[in-house]
Length: 349
Ligand code: F6P
Image (cartoon, rainbow, N blue to C red):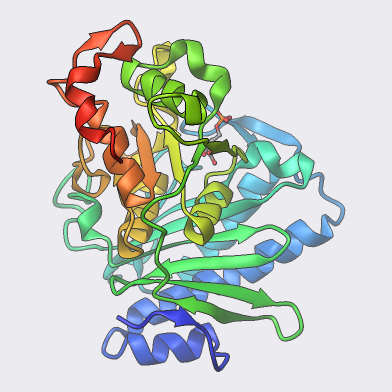
């Protein structure tokens, strides 16, 4: 796997022509998604006549309010997949059920067409997350995804100050930027690596009173800073768009946590396994990081429903490993403070 900053500028088409020899279908699909992103980015930039943040219709399959941009982006990406003729079925976070597209298609696309929709109104970064799976199990099993390891490619686009793409086809994670002068996605960095250690975490701290013990204890240790157990100060960021928080972690390390909590609808956290956690976990792992649900690797989880949620913790590998120790069964708890006997193993960390 190559890695490093781009020396000679390459477009996504040039890069994929080199890396996906013999896998032209995947290249075609990714280029079609990139094209749909150009259109979506244009709509977001211009705004036009439409109030993109307006709540329309009811709620999506997940119970979230659907906004005009959610629906528009879903249409744009679904059409792009359909036009390739390669996609057997389109699985969208915005749709209750899979949409069958092309009977002879060899692939399934799973997508969150507009991630971070609570940020649409506020001009904060939002994005599109996608995965490409083989269609071999489609029609054979209720859920044709066996685990996140089946993904052939995964990526997310961020509509922010720049429109960017983080992409993996199974051989490292590459970072692209949409050049506004020629409307091409150009490489910024190939084979990027998430720093293994970083003192920065992202969590919605307003849920603190609902957290489970391991998370409460971990965040408590971070908050105690250099006077506390970790002996180091931590910084916190929470953008409220998974794509933007993940993009920051790719660029300077850190961890993201959306754990399960005690609220009835949040026992499995907020994020969708198939549409959000799998693709982010593949990108993270391909960049040397780790993604877990607390105890297990996210990519090994087997889905039981297409819209199921999962707790999600990912980022710098050493910090994620540290967090996983709070879930160890032999950790003894004293309220929200684990006894130090077990964890003193890590004092030197
Ligand atoms: O997809 C859901 C999402 O918008 C993510 O992009 C983001 O990380 C999270 O929800 C924000 O959740 P909350 O509104 O609880 O902060």
